[in-house]
Structure formats: structure tokens, C-alpha cells
Image 1 (cartoon, rainbow, N blue to C red):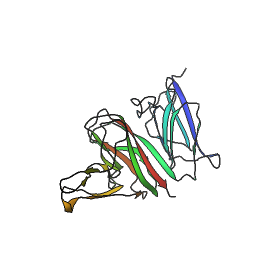
Image 2: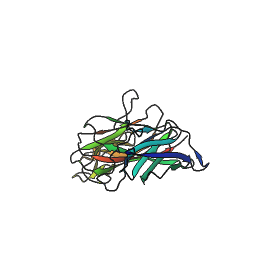
Image 3: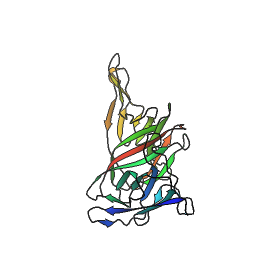
Image 4: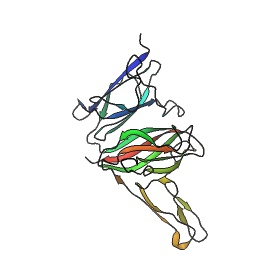
Length: 257
């Protein structure tokens, strides 16, 4: 008898009630968030009942996500990004769930992907690519396992694509549980109150001029959106030197196809 449990999940179009034929969509499978400590840890998945290795993210076949886990795994969190830019984040699903839906009329999407320590200071390619005409409006970092004194960057890979690897978020502290603020700090000065902008939103999502305690240099900051072009597309993150940090990134965007 096999020691593995099979999971089969098909993406459906909710409006047409038809399966989605997508063989380049990708998914990542995570431990179900029963507690914050275990959340965002990748599940050990295999390709078949013989235990053949299967790396993540997993590429779907005609919209079907298939993988195996140990029989002791009762629930997982699954995050899927389709080729057309539809995002699905299903939490605590069991192996009896065989269908997840996309909503074609829902333009606002939230794509969630795990942030894990792999090698401090090393750019980590998530394996997920954002399609063209994704108008990214915001990003949030969720810290699930803290690592004092460390930070994480989010962006698009620079190699080949010439992306900004901290263009979405830069130097975000992972010292506390929850959602660290990405907005600049207003500092009370002797001469004038001014903005300190050293961490938070990256250059894709904000424009900033650092301030100082002088009337002529109080600084400035403006939020902005970023439209993907299909060339700069590979999502990456970089932990500064972390060895315990685990978390999630939530990318908010409007898919304009």
C-alpha cells in the first residue's frame, strides 16, 4: 500500500462552469496555517506514489494540479497563478477538494506567495511570472516567523529581464509578527517635520525624496502604480541574512487583458 495521498484540483471558470485549459499556470503548496509558526512552510510534495521528487512551484496540466503528500497531511494551503493572471489562494483545503474557481469578471486580484529563508543575501526566484498588463497597485508583507534584525526585498529579477529586485518593497523589517508598514516615517524636527524614507515601498510603487531637519529639505513621497510589460515578469525576493524568517507576500493588482 502506498504511503502517499493523492491530491487532484482542477481550475474552473465560474461563469461558464467549464474547466480551464491552462498548462502553464503554476501553483505552490504550503502547510495549512493551523498556527502562525507552521504557516508558509512548503509541504513536501512528490510526483507519484513511488515518491518521485517534485519541485515547487508545480506546473498545472490543462488546469489540473496533481501532487502527492504523506498520508498524515490532512490540509494544505494552495496558491495558484494562471497564465492569464487570475490568482487563487485557498486555505486549509483537504484532499476531497477537487475544484477551485476563477471569476473572469473579477479584475482585482491578490496573488499570495511564500517567503522563506533559503540563503541570506541571495535573490530567490519564486518561479512565478506576472503577465503583461497587470496594474500592480499595492503589496503587503506578512511576517509569520520573526527574525530580528533582518529584512526582505521584493521585486522582479534583474538578470536577463533588467527588473528592479527591490522595486516592489525594500528593506522590510521581519522583526515582528504581522504586517510591517511600508509607508515613510514622519519625523518631528527642530526646524521642520520631515520624511524619512529608507525602507518600505520600492521604486515601482512609490517615488520619494528623503528629507532632513531643514526648511528646504523636508522631503516628499508619492504612491504610484506599476504596469507590467510581459518582459520584466519574474517575481523574486531577497532575505537580507535571515535564517528563521518565514512569511507571505500579497501582491494586489488589476488584470487589464
